[in-house]
Image 1 (cartoon, rainbow, N blue to C red):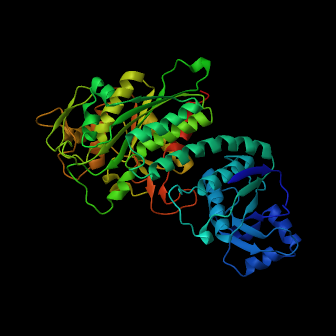
Image 2 (cartoon, helix red, strand yellow; image 1 turned 30 degrees about the vertical axis):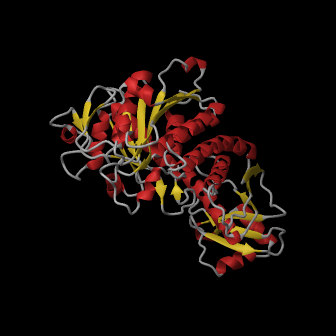
Image 3 (cartoon, rainbow, N blue to C red; image 1 turned 135 degrees about the horizontal axis):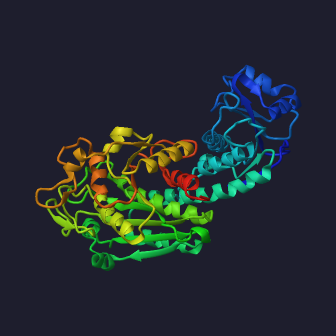
Length: 502
C-alpha cells in the first residue's frame, strides 16, 4: 500500500473521508462537501446511528455533486480530545472498512484539529502510520485466495495544512513500522521454517542496514560457559545460537557512552521438553520466540530511521524438544555466571535462556540498562490478560519511563512487585537456584522475574513478560490476528523520549 500527503483539496477520483465531531458537528471540509452534494451528508445522518463519536463511520456511495466514488464520514468525538493513538486507530479502521467496501484509493482530509498535545500534520502522519499497520497481512504460505475477500485499497493520501511536515514525520513512522512488520513476520513463521539457525540468518539481513551482527554457535557458547542456555536446546536436532546485533548511531559527542541493551528470549518452538505440554494448543508455541522477535524488529527500526543512539540487541535462540538427549527434571546445569541451577521443570526454559543472555550482555557491554522481553509465563495472562505486559524492575526511573512510553503508543505495561520474600522461592536445597518456585502456582510470574534478577548484577534492568501480548486471536484496527509486533513501538518511543538528543 502506498501513502502520500497533500494540502487540503477535494479529490476528483477514488474515495473521500471527512471528519465530524460529537453531536454530528461538521468539520470545515465536511460542511463544504455537504454543500456540494446539496445536503447529502445531512440527509444520511438523519437516517443513521452515526453521532460523531470516536469509532463512528458512515459511507455514502456515489454522491451527486462530486466525482468521488464514495464519501466516508468518520467521528472524532469531542473537539480537542484526541490522542495520537486515536489517529492511528482511525487510519487502521479506515483501511479495514474500505477494503471491505472494495475501494482502491482514498483521500483523508484533516482540517485543523485544535489539539494541545500535537499538531494536525503530526496527526496526519499518525493516520497514515496506523493505516500501514492495519494493512499488514502474513500471506507467505497462502496459495488459495478468496478474491472477494482480498484487500483492494492500494493508496491513501492524507490531506492537511503543512503536508510537507507530515510527509517528513511519516518517513520515521514508516521505518518504525517496517520493524514492527519484521517482528510480526518472525512470530508468524512456523517452526519448521524458523529455527535457531534460520532465525540467525534473518538477523544477518540487517547487516545491509548498518547493523553489526555476530552469531555465536554452540562451540563458542560452550567455551563461554553458557550451560543454562545450552541445556534447553540439547534435546533438539537444531543447534542453538546466540545472536548479537549492534547499532552504533550515536553522534560523535555521545559515541563513547554506554549502549542501551535489549535482550530477547528466542525459543523457536517449545514442547515443554520432558515436562511435555498438553497437545491441544501446542501449535501456538511457534511464537515462544516473541521476545527475540521484538528485539530484532527494534534493531531494524532503529537502523531504518537512523536513530542517534548506540544500542545492542542480544537474543538466545533454542528449541525445547523431548529427545532422548533432552534435559531432565532433576538435572543441574552451570550458568555463565557460575551459579548452578536445578531443573525442576523443563517447561520453565525461557528463564534459563535469558539467564545466560543477560549475564553475557551485562558482562561484555556494561550497558546503560538492560531490558529483556520474553513470552515467559502463562501466569502473566491470568494476572493481566491481553491488555498489558507484566513489568518487573530493579529501577523506579526505568519503570516509569517504560510505563509512560507504553501509554503513549497504546502498548501498555503494568508493574508488579518484587521482594526477598519472592526471591527465596528460587533457592534450591542442592544447587544455587532452582528454575521454578517452591510456592506452587502462586506468583509464578514474579518468581520467574526474581530468578532473572540473579543474572543482572547492579545493572538497571527491566523485564517485560509479553506472553499475553505477542499473539492476538482478535483482529483490531492496527494489530491483526496472529503476531502483533508488540514492544517495538513501545521501546522505540522509550528511546526517543529518554535517550535521543539528550
